[in-house]
Length: 349
Length: 260
Image (cartoon, rainbow over all chains, first blue to last red; front, side, top):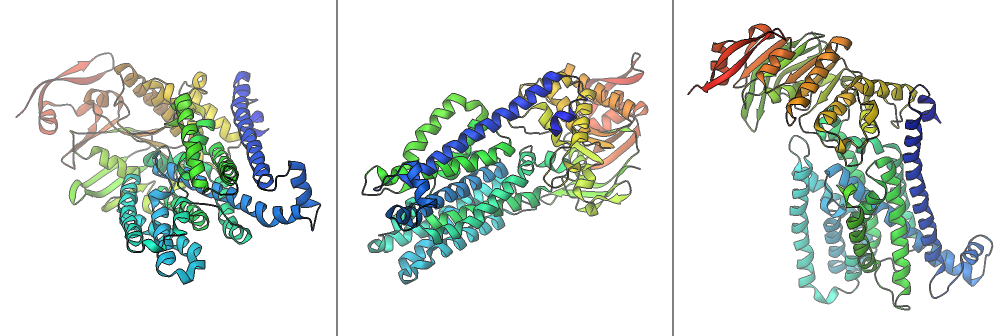
């Protein structure tokens, strides 16, 4: 409404129409993604060894109390689906933030050491101190943040240059990765359960995991809502950004910290789910463009949909055996992304 | 004085690039910094635009040290146009110019009615009205440079710093850009500080010229009196003929040979 009023003074009526058109199209795309997300949610909650229609799901959730349907949905399916959605939101937002901050299309949560840091810490606990197994999520979270901090400190030299940070990330990650590999070599007998963490899976995730995750997801969503323009401006290069009054160093540090929190929280709950943080942001970019005002919501919604959908397939495809969701995601998402890249590759740069 | 560099020293990895440079810019002037490669001209411009911190010395904006000023408050007075700029493939001219309003926006950074009016004004001043919905990437070199200048204008600054605004442009776009700068200076009273490679263009388009050599100010003169054979030899290591451009009422030179 405000936008249109402002343009009463403008001469060209065509302009108004076209501007509204671009905005409208992007909002429509977001709405489509939203519908996709709802479908994924209903599928994920409804399908399984006990299969329910969407109507039955809604009835079981809100109307019934002590039925089997209610028990299964409320205690098993719903929390797991919500965890899947939150993990998708956290990892994909983390990835899309890092791609902007680093101005590098290959940036993903693992380049700021989240995977290696979380991985090493989790492995140390699972392999050397198995009696403290319940500390794995907390440990992984701390490990992720410590690794990011280390990389940030190593890359610091009168400020942070994205390329130096990426290279420091590669160095630290391979160093920590060596630690992980050493543990696996020395204790081959204790690897059961460890592999799940390595691939990333959602099996038996329930309400406590949900409660661990939602504050971080909420933080990410708030940032995405309030500060998309900071990232848009950072994309124009450090000098231009400084010139129009953005505190480049401070902004970059803030966003890296948030990306680390988001990815760290997700990884601590589901393990090293590699694919979401890299491919989902790119897919969203190909669909909706590079303006973070639209890209942020698109990425979050798509991330949630993808993880929920893939987890449903992971549960169903070899029922009653479950496959880790990471495998499904890479199998389905990789080819789909390549297809998008070939079809609409121009926007990707 | 609207912008001043006072006894500024800058070094990269212990190599001193700028040694004790003083620069004074008066309101409404076009000031050009020239000098051979490695003379420190881009470096001092970066210090003036606060993208580089001097090791010693001060940069003063309207008499206040920039170090102690809020970066948004600076951006409301001073706009910069670096040599290397990046732009995402799907950003429109209008959106780019809109980012120039950033230092004036409140929490949440939403554009208000008056911001849209200023964007329109900036597009009109740079003659980009018809191209406002085109992607910046699809513009010609000259149009793209005008789009960046429009973004700087949308900041509503008093002073604009441009680092080699004509580099990478065809000669027609170079003239177009410099003419635009001259026009903005005359009609809006904007102050310009820029780095140029082409000595003749510097003489023709600026009021005052700072010539840098080996990290120091070799001389600072009115543009009409800077070109001498002695000057060309000392600063640029060339022998040249100095001639008069009757149309534009300024002198120009033709390089003849390199002095060993």
